[in-house]
Image (cartoon, rainbow, N blue to C red):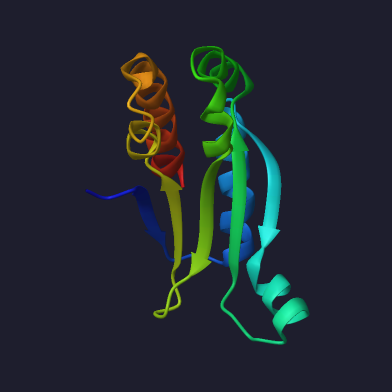
Length: 128
């Protein structure tokens, strides 16, 4: 079972970051955090790494519904979307598969949220 939804794109990294953030916004997600892994590894470890950003995406309405049903769900939030350079020079955008993520709770009352988020993430990827 895969735990991500992915799309590979042959366009500049920074452009894909901006388009991804914009597409997430169109689907009702804000980016709560933006972690530049390359910069962090350079600063903290003095190590070089490919361009790699982790975007912590959250749809407040869906998060509220999920937390009302399962208070500990916050340990799985926000939903991460990563954008990274691949070895062949393309860029991959990879979003966590909400069904796999929420499936760990064993709470089937959350299935509708997982389905909704998955559909939104699929539209984000399709738009890139």
